[in-house]
Each structure stands twice: as C-alpha cells, then as structure tokens.
Length: 158
Image (cartoon, rainbow, N blue to C red; front, side, top):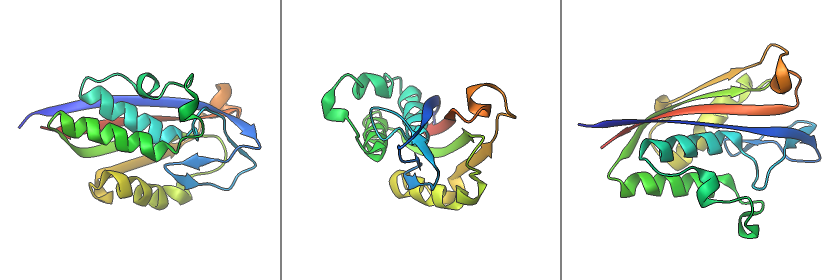
C-alpha cells in the first residue's frame, strides 16, 4: 500500500459584519472572516492538503478569487471538489489533522461540532479527524485578533 501526505494552510482577516464560519459551522462572534468565498479557513486548509497530496494545484487555481462565479461560494463545495480529485488519483483519505489558530473566540467547545461537520463531507469517521485549537499568545495579527489561520495535514492511501 502506498501513502501520500499533503499540507495545507489558510489565513483570513477578521472583519465586523462578516459571518464566522469554521469547518462549515457558524460560530457566534462579533467578527467573521473576510474573503471572496465564505472564507472558511478550515475547509480551505483541508482542501489544499488533499490537493497537495495528489500533486494538484491549490484551491486558488481552481477557484480563483478573480472569478465572480465563486463569490460567496460555500467552502464545502471546494472540499467536495478536492475529494473528487483525490478519488480520480485512485486514493482515499485515511485521516486529517488540523490546527486552528485564533485568539478569540475560544474554539475548544466547538471541536466535536467541527468534527461532525468535516466528517459529513470526508466520511472517514470522526476518530480519524484530529483538531487542535490554539492561540498565538498575543503575537502578530493572529494574536492581535485580526485574523484566524488553519493548518491541515492529510494522509491518503492509494
């Protein structure tokens, strides 16, 4: 059996008046993530990790922010696209590991909901989805609560 590993990352600016959607879950907060799509950094990072593992280009290539047809797209559609690419390469997702960095809001209480939402699309089992929520200890734009970032690693099997 062959294995493939992919790494994805994403960051979006926090802005008042935008919804905060992480892993497809609406998180109550006074700010949300600004982006051409719904700016879901979790789904974006997972999608890029999956695409990277099979040697494909990143989501910006397939869902260019310069194209109006992708304005406000639900990032679950992007993740579904990435899964289809994985399948066309003869692979399946074994597990994903995710680190979300946000000073506020505190996200640890949402981990189970995030896992359910991710698994609704990946269909690999919640026990194969690892999520860690961290702060940036007050440092930089993440620590100053001006952005939220996510890193994801995906392990695929052929």
